[in-house]
Image (cartoon, rainbow, N blue to C red):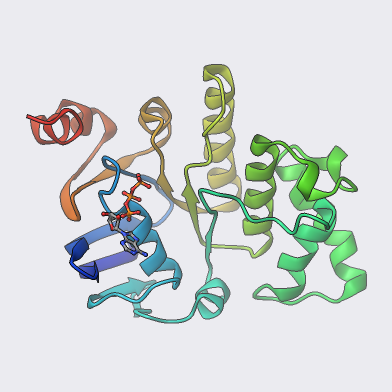
Length: 239
Ligand SMILES: Nc1ncnc2c1ncn2[C@@H]1O[C@H](COP(=O)(O)OP(=O)(O)OP(=O)(O)O)[C@@H](O)[C@H]1O
């Protein structure tokens, strides 16, 4: 069953058509990669789904219900969480407090006493249990990405949208991160929609891959089908 559906999504910025009548589905319980060359429209699509932008045309359905143009806080309550390519933690707060903000303001708001008990669990889930009292501003890039995943998980999402969480990792760390995301998906019954430029990671992690090119939906297939497809090769390498 499709957890998320887009139908004919179009979004323009002045004279630039960032998305041109894009339709897609993300099936419940799967990891779906979203790839495409720079400027293909991936981030714009994420922004439409997560409520940061409204489409000029088209509809978005989540669990079969129309969520087109709904505000981000409502979408969070419904179970959509996203990370950002450039992370945005509260730098002066500790890692624990950063997760606490998500718990206190999330879909099932927790009081002060409760969040202090609950928050460590989310840091432990991303392997950062030992950094609870560390200010987020002093984390390295990889730790900031992990903290962002912890904050997303604290909102108890059904759909976790990951925007380039592997930047800066070496090949061994990428394998570990992919296994970690798959484990998260399995243990927490998540659906994962994942923008990633690291193709090896998408090949290893995703059951399906959606390819965008110049604002258009180029194809959807298994990772093996996508890397063999001549249209995809052409989109990445040019004529
Ligand atoms: N706020 C904006 N104002 C003007 N143009 C924009 C805006 N956001 C995106 N665009 C344009 O829309 C197109 C799609 O951009 P988008 O960021 O969605 O692509 P992308 O596939 O995420 O690219 P990348 O892989 O480089 O992050 C690009 O031509 C981009 O310049």
